[in-house]
Image 1 (cartoon, rainbow, N blue to C red):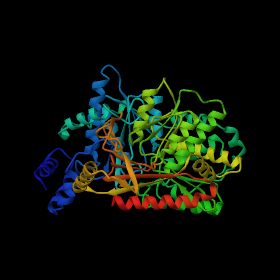
Image 2 (spheres, one colour):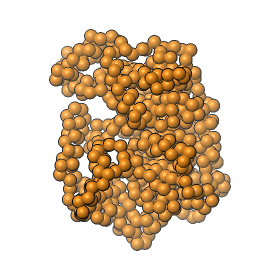
Image 3 (tube, rainbow, N blue to C red):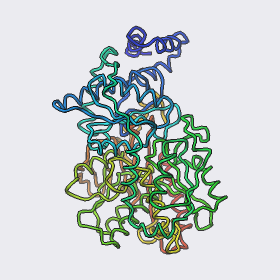
Image 4 (cartoon, rainbow, N blue to C red):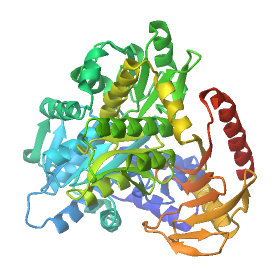
Length: 574
């Protein structure tokens, strides 16, 4: 261990930390677990695209009472500096993660100890409902205790601002500054004031579901297709009650649950990872759907802000749709339905992230609707919604990582409204004799066949962070001239805020906040993006390729060609 890490360990051994923490830390020292200690203390957890997230355990780089306490104390100090003449109010919610309840209580204790009024949910709730509650109760901030789809060892702390969106600049950096000022455990006030806590629950659930119900575009289609066979799994998480309730509220009467995955359990006993992006996480739901001959399979992640979808393909087999496909289908359905119903206005807009399929841009253009692109992370979608509120009309947003939002009732991705709208969309296509898979092929035939793949390379600990840094530096210093046999014509560096046209050598400025992202665009429209994750020890590569689809029968052949191109690009990336 280097000297700085040794000093951090000593502070925890000698400081005002509880005896259990000290005993566990002393055991690591006595057993000379230097790598474990280095990983636990080499840095402080920082707010990334999803807030504070990490492995649970002792140390400055772990989720525990003290890192959560320091974050809440820093946030409290910042809130009090911004809202000097108001009674500050916050909402706290949590999902089913191990330690979620005690962590939520610690957050409440520190807030109330600082004179801040707390609305505390009476049990686990989805992340989007927290965002909804912040807006409805006119709070100044909110905290969601969740690690989203990460493995069971993880916990997380998502900080929200008064608009119901995750904190963005300048608040995120200002909060971090305040947190860094908490350089001693003695600066954290853990002594609660129970008079400043109010329990909330059922009334907020009802308001949330009623709002979602109002977002439906074609309720008459649902009435005709009310018995659409839907299989749903909450994967042991918060959606266990609210998604089935929401589906019933909009009119669906044939919702079958995967009972084995309806038990609330932070160990996620039936899956390897509680991630709806993974086929394995939906395998039990798909098996049930096969037995029932269901029309639609949906499964949400632990905090119910993301949803995975499976539908029957042209061979009658259940096929997983990826996040780009679902986002494209949803946005096309919503925009088309609004236009047919006479609801579309010149102020309508949609939002997606820069690593989400550009098929969506083409769809929006064809409908005469503005499509904005923002940095990766739904918090940037929420921030744009707040910026444009009262000026333009938000219709829908989406990102490739299975997060979508229809309606402006929250400022974050919402798997609850996504489930109701995906079901409505499926019912609509069923009413005209089509499956969701048929609708996808229709999109490809109209706009081109797009295929995307995300490659996540995990590099843990301090050494891994250094390796990721070197990889990004190498890409900047030695950008590829060709990718997949196609010439690179544009290089976008979001850290420099510059787009370079390789063909003419002209560089132009980009209107984005600085972010460590590189994109390489080829002459045939392939797009490769590289970015370190803001919440996990990973570097992520996003590959997007496309080709025209002459006719429906050519889909399989075109899909194979695109798959081979992606594999070639993967090989080049190493």
